[in-house]
Image (cartoon, rainbow, N blue to C red; front, side, top):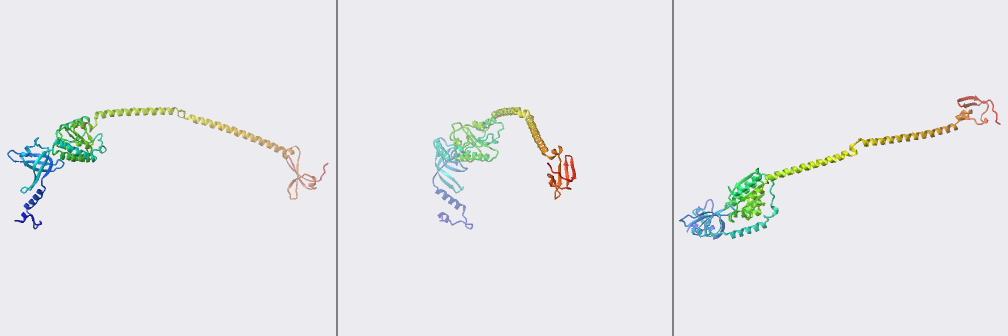
Length: 418
C-alpha cells in the first residue's frame, strides 16, 4: 500500500511537491464530504440528446454571475410536467461530484422540482416585506424627476414594443429629448446581470438625469427578474432617479416599489419623463401675457402716481412757496423798519426834551438873558465862582464870562449890596 492510498501524504514543499493526482484526490475527498444538497437556481441550458442516458443542465444564480453544471438521467428531465425550459426556476437535489480526469466539479441530480407560481409569489412577498422593513419602499427616499432632464437613459429589450413606446411618446412630447438606449435581456437568467450592468453605466454618466427601466407585459415568470433582490437593491442605491415601467397596469414587480417613480406602462413613462412642448409653449405665452399685463398695470399705476404728485401745488408751481416766503420776509422787514423808525423817533424826542431841559437849566441860557459869571483864582490858582464880595480884595484878577466869551479884569473896589 502506497502512502497516497493511506492518506498519510507528507506536507508539500518545493523539494517534496504533490503530484496532480494527489491534489485532485484530496479535492475530491473534500467535495464528497459535502454530501447531498438542495440547490435553487435558473436553468440556462438543457442538453438531452436522443440516444443518451445522461442529460446536462447549466444552473445559474439569478443574482450573481455564477453557474454550475448539473447532470441527471434523461428520464428525470422528461418526467417533469410541464416540460422544463430555459429560464425556469428549479430546486435540485444533487450531490457534488469532482471528476479527476477533467478537474471539474458538477452536481449529480437525483431529483428536480420546478418552482411553481405559488412558491414564486410567496418568495416575492417575503422579499417585499424584507425590503419594506429596511425602508427601501419609503416615500421619503424617493426623489423627484427633473423638470427637463438633460439626458435620459433607457434600459429595455432590443427592438421591443416597450422601447418604441417610450421613444415615440417622449419624442412626441419633447422632440429634442436626448435618450441613450441600452438594450438588455428583459427575461431569463441573464436579465438581472445585464440590467444591473446597464444601470451602473447610466448611473455613472453625469449627462444622464433620469433612468427608465421598461418592459412590456408578460407572465409572472417573465417578470421575475424585476423582483430580484439584487436588482432592487441596485436601483435603491443608484444616485440617479429611476423610473420603473414594467408590464401593464396590474403588473407590480418589486422594482415598482423601489423605483423613484412607478409608471403603469412604457407609454406612461414616455409621457412622464419629459414635459409636453406644446403645453410648455402655451404656458410660456400665457406667462408672457401675464407679465406684460402686470408690467403695463404697474407702469399705469406709477404714471397716475406721478400725475398726482405733479398736480400738487408744491410741484405745479414750485416758486409759489418761495414767493410767499419772500412776501413774508418783506412784510417782516417793513415792520422791523417801521418799528426801528418809531423807536428812533421816540428816542430823538426824548433826547430833544432832555436837551431842552438841560439848556433851560444851564448857565448859557441865563447868560443869554444878560447875566455873567465872575470867577477869581483861589490860593491854588484854580478859578472859583465869585459869590460874595468878601471873597476878593482889591487887585484880585477876575474873569467875567458872558454869553459870547470872557472878559478879564481887576477888583478896584467893592460895594456892599442893599
